[in-house]
Length: 267
Image 1 (tube, rainbow, N blue to C red):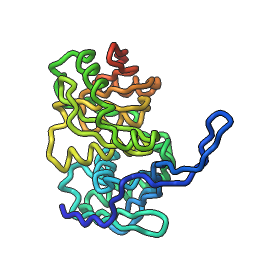
Image 2 (image 1 turned 180 degrees about the vertical axis):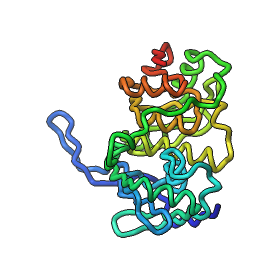
Image 3 (image 1 turned 90 degrees about the vertical axis):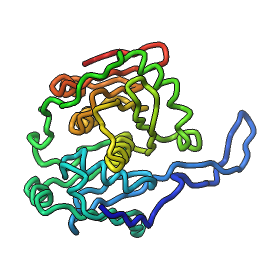
Image 4 (image 1 turned 90 degrees about the horizontal axis):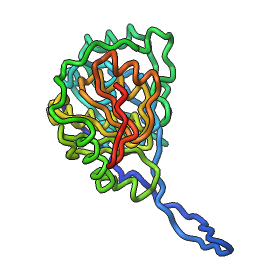
């Protein structure tokens, strides 16, 4: 798999602002997280436009292709080219003919936003709400101590959050909760896709760890994790009922309201 990465940014811009404090005001600058449309193009056909932070976009495209079932394996992607295009960016992926034919048959276009991962599906059947059971074995550590460690370590890895105050983080954790990788994005789904893409590029076994997210647990996040056979998903905020249902169907451990002093296990 080849990569031609022509676009990489810090993920934020300096903008002039007027800061009000009590009766006083002053003109200064502030770091603001970048958000731009990113088109994902498969074999010359644009299939999705997502609003994302223009950082780690090659990992994002790879993770999206895997977590959305566009391809089954990273080896199904033959080439990936990243280009700036007007006010946005394009990631052009060359995928196997078998994967492309399946994608065409699905006739699915994802018109994405930073807060939504399934806009544009054509029918309820395409939501894929009944995933197969994940193949990964149960983690060797109990959820609560591992989650407590991940919660205590996450903030020190959130450089873009510290700079802007406006992004989500997706962390890959060892079974004991030690954080190994963190990716950030204005969208929680994008952050998870960036993490999945990075793990796939590194050839890491996604069954031997868990994901910790600085967000709520929506069904799309659980579905992505289940598709990658990740055994546990932990989130800072609440889950939805559908997220719990999908986690139970897939045999995935779902833990939310994660803090250093406790958590709630829903599945």
